[in-house]
Image (cartoon, rainbow, N blue to C red; front, side, top):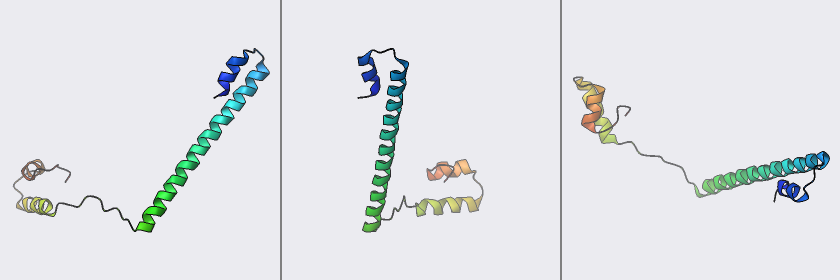
Length: 95
């Protein structure tokens, strides 16, 4: 429950009360944001520790050796453009 709700309940036009409640509300929001950030950092650290303990190493996607070899062969021949080679090998031009 935020202090905005409390301020509505009090229905005061006192500027001092309004300022104090606004200050408290901002402090609560800052506190909750800090707690969330610390919790996230702790979770990330525990995940890293668990992965290190298990010996996990991300491998990523393996390169398609046959496709790369075929691309190199077609490049050596030199009678096709990059776009034609990509279409022939069924891959993107960036590959």
